[in-house]
Image 1: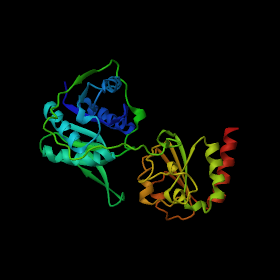
Image 2 (image 1 turned 135 degrees about the vertical axis):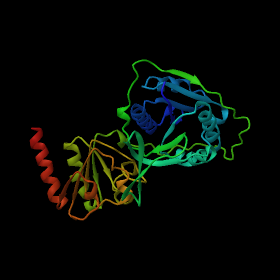
Image 3 (image 1 turned 180 degrees about the vertical axis):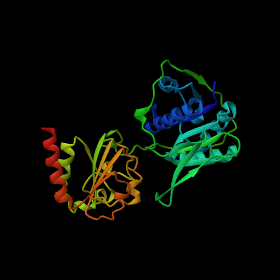
Length: 329
């Protein structure tokens, strides 16, 4: 048996967070590189069904910890439970998806363990058999390489979209599910969950779209959105937008891409009239192919685009629509 990689699977109301599956993909790939075994970890109460769901994936074993104090997330409760599990299992790595919850408690967990945390990574690479973790600095303009020194466990969180949940490997046989004992009797949580308020239900989950046509302030006025809708239609794509378009109310907020919207990684991301502010780029930079249309040749969006068209979108988009129609005939 190789060393262990623990991966925390976040859950709420019996549903595992999609980005947690991305962290499992990271674990599967890292495990293959290092000959380590992947062990998903689920915290909560009455979560046997989630353990069975995780056991269908290509993992060694699923660990579940149940307690009344883990029914709802609190930083003190999750830190105490994860610390005990890590001390029992002695993993080499502990992986997380860089969600709001993980941002809240993972630094506290690292401090409790006296270990380092490399957070918000966009990828990893291998150098001489050692994983090097890459994260962005200076508002996403520079990639920096980080590696661990000292003894494990090594804690790492990956940015949403760094890995694709569709690449999750199923197991050839079902893994076992093991209940891990955690003693929460001496844990005093300094926060209490009084109420969980559901947000407005999204009209569309853009994270599942294979193709996205996204529009920025270059569209000038809402009446011109019909042009972008037509392009999205011929490409069989979802329509999205940068923050200024949604702030104006031209498209609903659930169509917003960026740091204050959805984070996506489609096969095709077509940016129309988007300059490329860092707040937008962080939400789509992991797209497989990025095509940008902008009349400003110095627009930052061209720095990350695979293909760029410098021109007036009101001339380029109609021509593109006709070209796509001809190809589809």
